[in-house]
Image 1 (cartoon, helix red, strand yellow):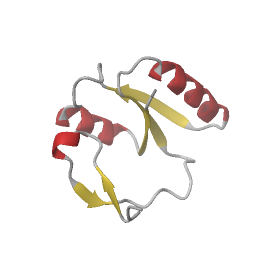
Image 2: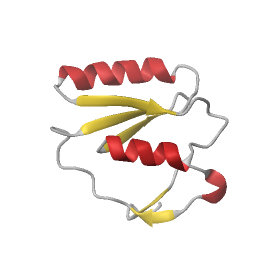
Image 3: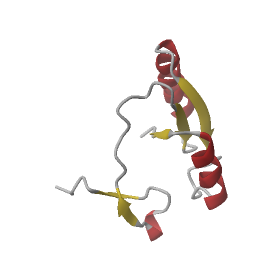
Image 4: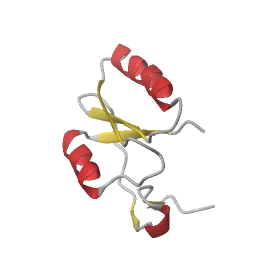
Length: 94
Protein backbone atom coordinates (compact mmCIF):
# COMPACT_ATOMS: atom_id res chain seq x y z
CA UNK A 1 0.00 0.00 0.00
CA UNK A 2 1.36 3.45 -0.91
CA UNK A 3 2.35 5.79 1.86
CA UNK A 4 -0.23 8.47 2.63
CA UNK A 5 2.66 10.89 3.19
CA UNK A 6 3.20 11.24 -0.57
CA UNK A 7 0.81 11.69 -3.41
CA UNK A 8 1.19 11.80 -7.16
CA UNK A 9 0.55 15.00 -9.04
CA UNK A 10 -2.41 14.20 -11.36
CA UNK A 11 -1.57 17.00 -13.82
CA UNK A 12 0.52 14.81 -16.15
CA UNK A 13 1.17 11.10 -15.84
CA UNK A 14 4.17 11.33 -18.15
CA UNK A 15 6.00 13.72 -15.87
CA UNK A 16 4.44 13.35 -12.45
CA UNK A 17 6.20 14.91 -9.50
CA UNK A 18 6.23 13.60 -5.95
CA UNK A 19 5.48 16.25 -3.42
CA UNK A 20 4.54 16.14 0.25
CA UNK A 21 0.81 15.71 0.83
CA UNK A 22 -0.81 18.77 2.33
CA UNK A 23 -2.90 18.21 5.40
CA UNK A 24 -6.63 18.36 4.59
CA UNK A 25 -8.57 21.23 6.16
CA UNK A 26 -10.34 20.49 9.43
CA UNK A 27 -13.53 21.93 7.91
CA UNK A 28 -14.76 23.19 4.55
CA UNK A 29 -16.71 26.02 6.20
CA UNK A 30 -15.55 29.38 4.92
CA UNK A 31 -13.46 27.86 2.14
CA UNK A 32 -14.05 28.02 -1.60
CA UNK A 33 -14.22 24.53 -3.09
CA UNK A 34 -13.05 24.23 -6.69
CA UNK A 35 -15.01 21.66 -8.69
CA UNK A 36 -12.57 20.63 -11.42
CA UNK A 37 -14.00 19.18 -14.63
CA UNK A 38 -11.40 17.09 -16.46
CA UNK A 39 -13.41 17.26 -19.69
CA UNK A 40 -14.85 13.74 -19.78
CA UNK A 41 -18.40 12.85 -20.70
CA UNK A 42 -20.89 13.12 -17.83
CA UNK A 43 -18.44 14.83 -15.48
CA UNK A 44 -20.64 17.97 -15.49
CA UNK A 45 -23.62 15.87 -14.34
CA UNK A 46 -21.59 14.48 -11.44
CA UNK A 47 -20.27 17.90 -10.46
CA UNK A 48 -23.79 19.39 -10.69
CA UNK A 49 -24.93 16.97 -7.99
CA UNK A 50 -21.85 17.55 -5.82
CA UNK A 51 -22.27 21.32 -6.17
CA UNK A 52 -25.95 21.09 -5.23
CA UNK A 53 -25.12 19.15 -2.05
CA UNK A 54 -22.30 21.54 -1.09
CA UNK A 55 -24.54 24.56 -1.67
CA UNK A 56 -27.30 22.98 0.45
CA UNK A 57 -24.73 22.84 3.26
CA UNK A 58 -23.92 26.54 2.74
CA UNK A 59 -20.53 25.85 1.18
CA UNK A 60 -19.12 28.07 -1.56
CA UNK A 61 -18.11 26.41 -4.83
CA UNK A 62 -16.42 27.54 -8.01
CA UNK A 63 -16.42 25.54 -11.24
CA UNK A 64 -13.14 25.17 -13.06
CA UNK A 65 -11.46 22.68 -15.34
CA UNK A 66 -10.03 22.01 -18.73
CA UNK A 67 -11.87 21.71 -22.04
CA UNK A 68 -10.90 18.13 -22.86
CA UNK A 69 -9.51 15.05 -21.18
CA UNK A 70 -7.10 14.58 -24.09
CA UNK A 71 -4.84 17.41 -22.95
CA UNK A 72 -2.99 18.15 -19.74
CA UNK A 73 -4.12 21.23 -17.82
CA UNK A 74 -1.74 24.09 -18.51
CA UNK A 75 0.41 25.48 -15.70
CA UNK A 76 -1.35 28.83 -16.22
CA UNK A 77 -4.77 27.22 -15.76
CA UNK A 78 -3.62 25.41 -12.61
CA UNK A 79 -2.11 28.61 -11.17
CA UNK A 80 -5.34 30.53 -11.85
CA UNK A 81 -7.39 27.85 -10.11
CA UNK A 82 -4.98 27.71 -7.16
CA UNK A 83 -5.33 31.46 -6.71
CA UNK A 84 -9.15 31.35 -6.71
CA UNK A 85 -10.00 28.34 -4.52
CA UNK A 86 -8.86 26.79 -1.25
CA UNK A 87 -9.42 23.10 -2.04
CA UNK A 88 -10.22 21.17 -5.23
CA UNK A 89 -12.44 18.19 -5.94
CA UNK A 90 -11.54 16.58 -9.27
CA UNK A 91 -14.55 15.08 -11.02
CA UNK A 92 -13.78 11.81 -12.78
CA UNK A 93 -16.52 10.14 -14.75
CA UNK A 94 -15.10 6.65 -15.28
